[in-house]
Amino acid sequence: MGKTLTIAPVSRLEGHAKVTIDLDDAGNVVDARMQTVELRGFERFAIGRPVEEMPRITTSICGVCPWSHHLASAKTNDAVFGVTPPPAGTKLRELCNSIAFTEEHILHFFFLAGADFVMGPDAEYPVRNVIGIAQANPDIGKKVVRNRHLGAKMLNIVSGKTIHPVTAVPGGFSKPLKEAERQKVLAMAEEVLEFAKFSMSFAKENLFPKYLDVVKTLGVINTGFMGTVKDDGTFDCYDGKIRLMKPDGSHTDFAYDQYLDHISENVLPWSYMKFPYAKSWGEGFDMNLDAPKGIYRTNTLARLNVCDKMSTPLAQAELEEFRKEFGRPAQATLLYNWARLIELLHHAENAVRLLNDPEITSKETRVPVTPRAARGVGCTEAPRGTLIHDYTTDEKGMITKCNLIVGTTHNNAPINMSVKQAATSLIQNGQYDEGILNKVEMAIRAYDPCLSCATHNLDGTIAVSLEIKDADGNVIASMRN
Image (cartoon, rainbow, N blue to C red; front, side, top):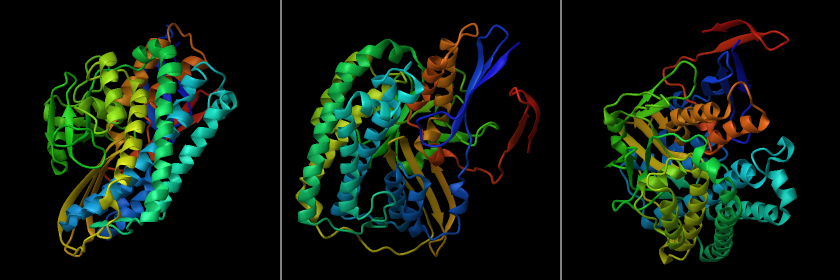
């Protein structure tokens, strides 16, 4: 008889999820899904709040990437109030964004995804983690911890707060950067840049070559991509326009506030996460593994695919080498990890560049704002992908409508497609082991999903299912509202 395999919880990611894999009578995969088993519902309880509170309270959505929500919300407030921050205010926001990216990418590669490459995907579970990395490579472990600490310390100096920032405000940045602070942070940023160089070289020389066959085959799907670029197509994670690329490499660019002309969101009954798709392609939505329709991806690999070039020299050299090896657009899912290290290098370079800009210590960091009835759309690139905040306010500046589309939500359909591809290719005739199931998880971890960010309630109802199992794990009764 057929059976269902359950991986719960999926390990080394932010949030809570499980994978269910349905096998037929012969032990081959019929279907596989990643199901998010949590709900935050932030969009609903934002309604009725003063819009200027949003940059402060959206940081509580996620403690891993609070800066992304903080900055996207501040940019949305700028649009609602109809103001443009002074140059120094914008540069301080961008600086914090790049520092936060370095901290988060170090976290994901070395703490979450990297153990599969450093220790090996078939390594024993107790050592297939950051502790195992530190035990096997103590010098690397020390560097990882120090450079994550430096990222947090830099954010604390620049903004006064690391985890739940409050410094990006409507109209700019509330805290000018003093010259003594600039010099102190610059020295730290230069050290992080050296670690980014080391990480890139270490992975290319010691990790990725050993698993290139896995990279080229595990979780591979064919989709479009989306990310932010400047007007000339240059990679940018703070500001620009959205580029939506089809699987063949052709693309369309549009302003943030036009996203509803290009993207729609689907709801399926088995997930708390919505399923965005590219409605402007005119294909509808279908996450069929063999013939997907309207599916695009965001996050590191997507950003490298959609951009024409990088704005920093070391990252540009790595991008050229990456494209020579894998083409454009690259489709292999595990390449997200390679792309993540290129981005780490870029953001370390960018932080040093901004700290060497004389204007960044200007005291003119914000402009005044006045409440009004308006709609504003703000967007940044979060580590997990394109992050869109959309607020509508009344004449007193109170929120009447709120919509968030976060990076992991964009990737919901692709993650499920990658999970099914990985499970289908690895599980044959009922044969599987812990290493094979971990490789299915690797297809998820490559996307660096942030599930607490991504679970939002669309229509005010919550689907709840209850399963009762016997001692052998068989479902003997189930209920669903």
